[in-house]
Length: 178
Image (cartoon, rainbow, N blue to C red; front, side, top):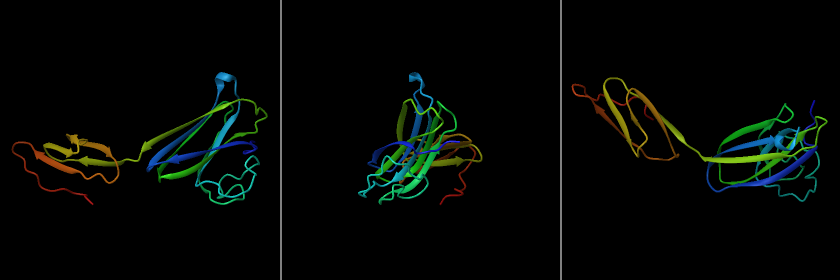
């Protein structure tokens, strides 16, 4: 069994626009690390005066340090010594996020870990399925298909779809548009 949160570090992540955030925590096996990595992400920044930041915390709860300002968003806890954990948090709003990184107490607490944060602008997907002969294209570019295709665009993008029937065919209607 692992006892999480006995060895812990934390950091502030600031997003300046809506995005998907992928957090990856890996044991640094190049340095011989055999830790079992884990982390939790919270919305906000701990605004309390409590100095318990290096005490065991309770993942899965808002304000895990008995302070204020943190809303639990999710966690990833490893099961393998020397492993990696990763989780993507989709559609995060601009603002501050606090990341707590910890290791399982698998009797081998020595070792280092690496944290990788990757952001990707949130995307909305459009799937086009056509029946008959012809093509469908979009402005801005992205959709240009035969029988079926899809493309991703930033949320709020206004698209113009153009159906071009093949010779001898005609465009009848759009279905499933909301």
